[in-house]
Image 1 (spheres, rainbow, N blue to C red):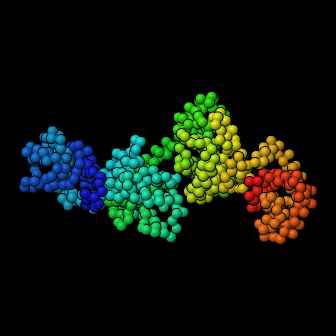
Image 2: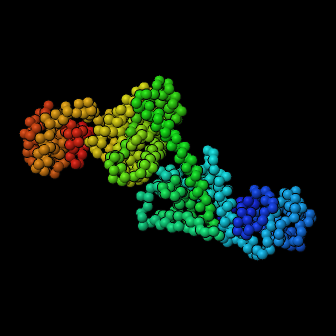
Image 3: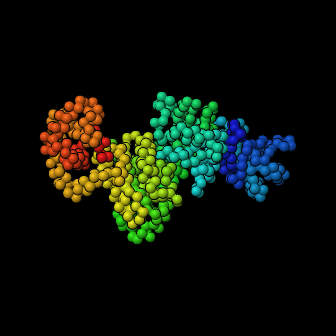
Length: 574
């Protein structure tokens, strides 16, 4: 049966005459000489009886009278009935149709061969679910469009189910929920659980099943995943097929899904998929516009500073007081593509999810920023909020970088990202320079520390000078490396010694053999022997400050040229 509701919060989708007539015409082969007002509510059926009060408002009258006289039809219309089902052989007389039209009542003709029981089954069992399906789909579609469509949809789905719901987007943002005091959302926020990131729940505590509802012409199915947590259970269903457009969390604790719920969830998933698709198109268009602007900005082809600031304001960022630039880059992306061989749509989806993830994390720390996606990285211009000290930006940028890396690791486990952070530039005209600094910091960090590095331009020290030599005259850097550390590297490679690591540790400990011995778990005489061997091979004396400086630069040249030991050292901060 279509029930009024099994919880106080539940609101049943309104069944209208259009839904009812579809069942009559398609399932019972009825005739429709007059459809009536298709938007009128239908609450049930009433069989014609010679007693007072046989019909109630919004009920469809069912009669087998030989003729429909004026008194009968006026009586039906006066109760608020939307239509009459006339059990009649042949066609309805023209005068009956005209009378019904004058009274605003729909008229359907159904042969007496159809059992009355079959007619009443429309409001029970399988046909009832079909009628519910029509009403649910129409009701949810009415909530689409507009700026608050997702919130309205979440509220309507919650009302139909009589349960709290939360909508999660593909990158883990909780973008809509039902009600202000939504305990389901509070639980998800507190535990940090997201359907898009399954690392939060052990696989043995997850169970996925398809739930079904039988309709006259087949089945509807909805996949539902259950997560068992310490204090209870959580349930969600993916929105869309293939790569999910999002996820719908449902509070099912202490209850189970009924066939009616499956029908409602089926339509909720379809309508939410369409609405999230619109949001995705809007975001992709916005990202395209932002990407174009960022391309112009970092290349210096932005026209005047006034035009630069105007375009930035249009995109929601105030760069009048300058900004700090951050670059988030996918590590070894070309190698990843060669190994996985994804198709172009999958590549674009991955880049979009990375941009969404960076935006989500940035919003939690910065209110004034501009984001632009590029080929395999995301560029951020991080500006000061009103009253904020620019000196706080570098520390906040470091915090953001670590947050982005953690989030991406959970969202895209197969990928890692490195981050380069440039210096703060107060003059907007110097923002291209700030971007160049972030790129240099990114490249240096990746060469020295490998994947998942976070490097700031201000802390690269002499590395940035050597890197400039590498860019402008790589042969000169190669020659310097050959004059200093190359013989030592070759010796280590040939004999399996640890001369390079010993030298790095020694210089990092301010030339203390005692601390070096402690760090390497070796006797100090062994450390002394290794250092003397380094001196012999390099032709430099580690006890002389001038020669130590050359060896220090030789180590940095080695790292920038990619001749780094397998385990990068912490020497980069010297």
